Length: 68
Image 1 (cartoon, rainbow, N blue to C red):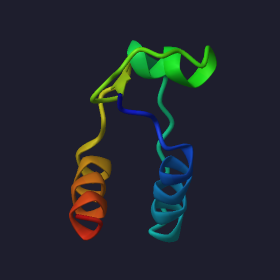
Image 2 (cartoon, rainbow, N blue to C red; image 1 turned 180 degrees about the horizontal axis):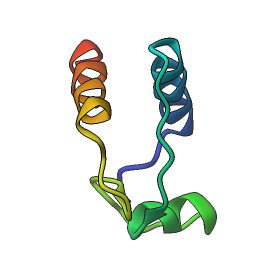
Image 3 (tube, helix red, strand yellow; image 1 turned 45 degrees about the vertical axis):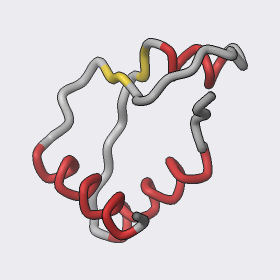
Image 4 (cartoon, rainbow, N blue to C red; image 1 turned 120 degrees about the vertical axis):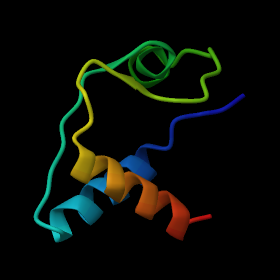
């Protein structure tokens, strides 16, 4: 089962702040269940109600690539 790593999300948030950026999202679906209800539902992604801006999406790709 996959889990949501809150520490990694916080680390990415710090990464964005260091670049003078921020992003807030409303998380829905299986990831939301895992975060707020301590659910056991496996999820391979995090669904958001908001469209991710291109500049934030580019940072996501860069951040992920740097961590393998």
